[in-house]
Image (cartoon, one colour):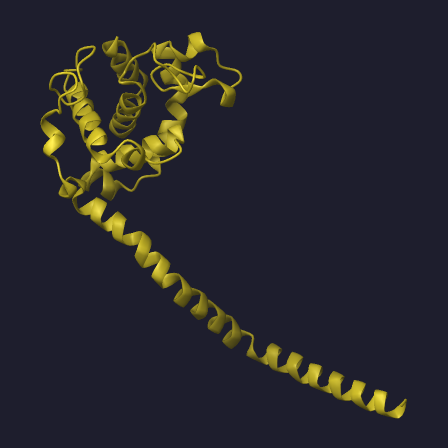
Amino acid sequence: MADSVVQAILDATRDPHVRESMLLGSRLESSWNPNAVGDNGTSFGPFQIHLPAHPGVTAAQAQDPAWATRYMLSAYQRGAAAQPESLWRSNPEQAAEQAAVAAEAPAASYYSGRGAESVHAAWRATVGALGGHAPADGAPPGGGSPGAPGTAQTAGLFDFGIGGLISALAVPLTLIAQPFTEIATLLTWWWTNRMKVAFIAVGVVFFIIGLVFFAKDNL
């Protein structure tokens, strides 16, 4: 059954980034099981299409590998295109994971929700599938016996690569820089509009003085 999902994805697109993203996403969502059912009987198929969010889709359609792949293709194309080419070169696993997150919209990223080791294992299965060696049904991602870790279970933090490190540092640096950026924007606006601000300030002062004299004359 896994082969039918892999083949459907390979038949649907020749874009390597989209292939990697769809293979990784469907592996994480269903282990390439077209008959998978999740979310208390509301999500179906290799991509776990959530029927309440897709009222025009039936369970049978979601469990048809070819149909489900065509249905999800545009979302994965957008997700893959949104990842920088530099990330695809430096850390294709992370690029594919982020593309899958964009397409599937899970509650949390797969690294956070499933754990890095699960993503590493699914990525190994993806690479194997692209090499023409899709894992057999029932085999855990990345090899090994059911319930036992695959060979990539020894993978560590550095598997994220330079691209992952840069991405991890970018968020806190952006948060630190944000207040300074806002201050610089405010100062730029003030300098550009300083004459207008001065005229408004003078006008406000004269208005207040006028109110004072008006109140004094009428007391």
